[in-house]
Amino acid sequence: MAIAAERIERLHTFATEAVRAGEQDRARTYVRRARRIAERNRLELPRSISRFSCDRCDVALVPGQNARVRLQDGHVVISCSCGSHDRYPYR
Amino acid sequence: MITPETIARHELVGLHVQVTESTDPTLVGCHGPVVNETTNTLVVRDGSRTRQVPKAIATFAFCLPETDSTVFVDGERLIARPARRTERTGGSQWQ
Image 1 (cartoon, rainbow over the protein chains, first blue to last red):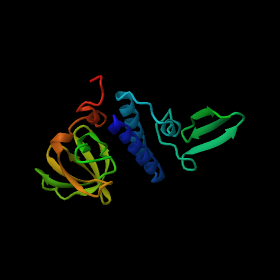
Image 2 (tube, each protein chain N blue to C red):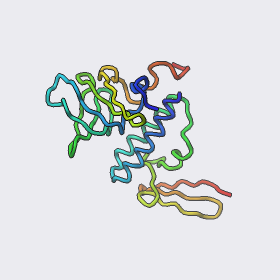
Image 3 (cartoon, rainbow over the protein chains, first blue to last red):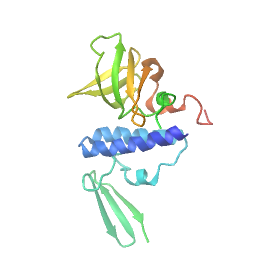
């Protein structure tokens, strides 16, 4: 089990690096693989990963690079450069 | 932690690798970070080009990041879908 969790962490760091290097498609394959590993090993994706990957296009989100983070009344909106938005409540 | 015991079940993307033996002489010596993996191949960034190395015909030397040591792995042991390699020796109780 521990190996699966470590793999997910590693894949996420490399996905973020790939986005910084401008290789979004490579980042997508890493994020998809991390999700697949979580699914097969019945693990929940860590919140840092589920919030900073796009549900629509699977790319890792890096604010300032391909993601926009905006605070609004009671929720934060994270937008991907593909056009999808995620909203998370805060207090 | 990636150790010689766990490397065949662990994530290979990002590890520095060198092809030490292969039945294809043009692949021997190819080295660089692993950028992708498929069931039967590893994609290695060798300088400015990427090379797709078949696992079945190569022996790889992986650099382990935590301990700074080198592990030689027979490519045969790595043949599996990337997400499924982790499950090969237990781990999941549903297998």
